[in-house]
Length: 95
Ligand SMILES: [Zn+2]
Ligand SMILES: [Zn+2]
Image 1 (spheres, protein in one colour):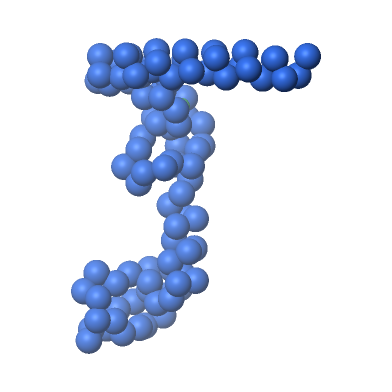
Image 2 (tube, helix red, strand yellow):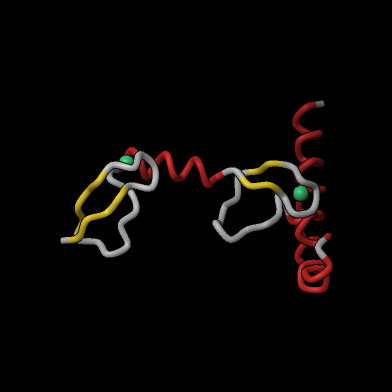
């Protein structure tokens, strides 16, 4: 059992987990909120990423990053088509 300091509240705690970072579920939850807002690399908008490694608010911004353009364009186009059909369906229900 090792001694750790909680990264959120700085209190000392013991854990069997070598990678422990937080004293309680409460602090773990706070840490999640703290890390959940990121700034998009492209449009500088704040967003909640799905993955910790994400750098962009949307596929559009991801594709705007030159490195990802070639990889993402086919995917991006298919998303746009599905959005189009979704909005057509919505119109059908609304009017
Ligand atoms: Zn804590
Ligand atoms: Zn963006």
